[in-house]
Image (cartoon, rainbow, N blue to C red; front, side, top):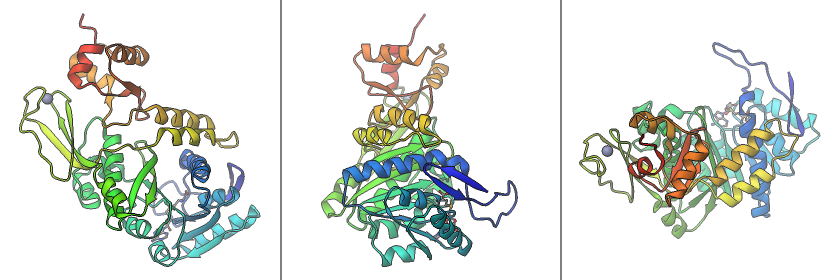
Length: 370
Ligand SMILES: C[S@@+](CC[C@H](N)C(=O)[O-])C[C@H]1O[C@@H](n2cnc3c(N)ncnc32)[C@H](O)[C@@H]1O
Ligand SMILES: [Zn+2]
């Protein structure tokens, strides 16, 4: 079957809907992820014009690498599966593009060749590829994680094993998953004296995606580690405390309601998950030839406007908690701002928001008591 994505035409295998499938992998639903990848690579080239080589580390059909090559990147498409590598070759040829294909375990390849940008898009967790990527890549590591249940605490033991952190299944699970992933990636990078700056990150129920810029000095790695800490979350009143540092000091009782059902998640990333100006530029590099252009522009605009702090609330969840009726989001956010707090929507859901007000302050500022 042939499909068009962006400016390229790609041969992709028919995917069996059920059972074991030997076909080379292709997921049409990830088009938004790939469109944003192309836009991010364009914005990144403006930021770092010396970056020129792009490794599609788990290429499958090669759709990411081919799209990068069509945009002028020196693309290398790697996969362990020989059928995938043949398909990558055909897809480069079909689009009249140069690009290297490699049948190799990408962990071995990364230790042999130096790339400016690597894109890690595995089945499930990216952790088995993180060491090789941060130890060897020059500028930018792009990562998809599709194991959202371990990341957000729904599969607790698996999350602890994979990410060397305690995740917690809260009502802001998408953000917990994103921050647990960032924490594990940042700590991995730090082992190689590499600091990371998240330029853009987004999450859905099905995956987390992040783009990490690298800096190669031990002091950069120290600054990265300083952005790690813990979230103490009260299951009774939904109050949260954010504590920086590598040692957790969980409160015995909730500072807001004195309840004793306080959960601690971490070590977790407490730093910014994006640079707003960069994300705006990503949005400007979304082009009309992209199938998800409208969604991609909306998503980048929402992410760019998001407050840079952990963790978001959901108005509907709070209203259920307080036994009150929800109101329109614009009015709700206006009430918070009129009371002197910062407030923004988030991309985690239509009724989600971030604010510097605590749960109790939100209740006082934005809820009708009558
Ligand atoms: C989720 S698919 C990649 C999808 C693709 N990036 C896209 O956007 O459509 C994961 C691919 O990783 C390959 N793979 C698994 N382990 C690998 C390894 N150690 N090195 C390189 N490729 C690997 C698999 O053969 C599979 O084709
Ligand atoms: Zn409480």
